[in-house]
Image (cartoon, rainbow, N blue to C red; front, top):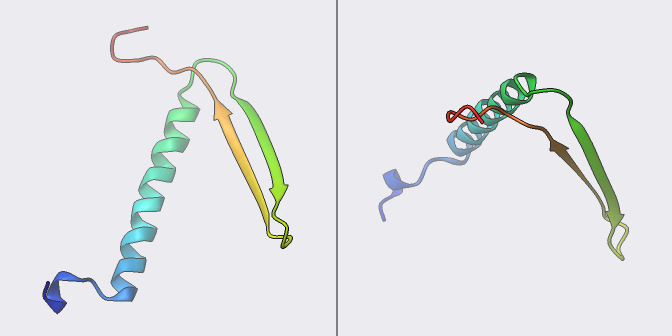
Length: 68
C-alpha cells in the first residue's frame, strides 16, 4: 500500500457522513412510500459498566417491482 491509497482521516470522515446521509434519505423515502402504517419496536439495555444502548426497528410493507 502507498500513502495515497489511504484517505486522510478528515476525508474518510467526510465520506462516511456523505454515505450516511444518502442511506438515511433512501430509508426516509422508502418509509414515506410504504403501503399503510409503519410499526416501531424498541429495546433498551445497559452493560455491567452502565454503558447504555437503544435499538429501534421499523416494520413496513413496500410494493416491489413485481407488483406484490
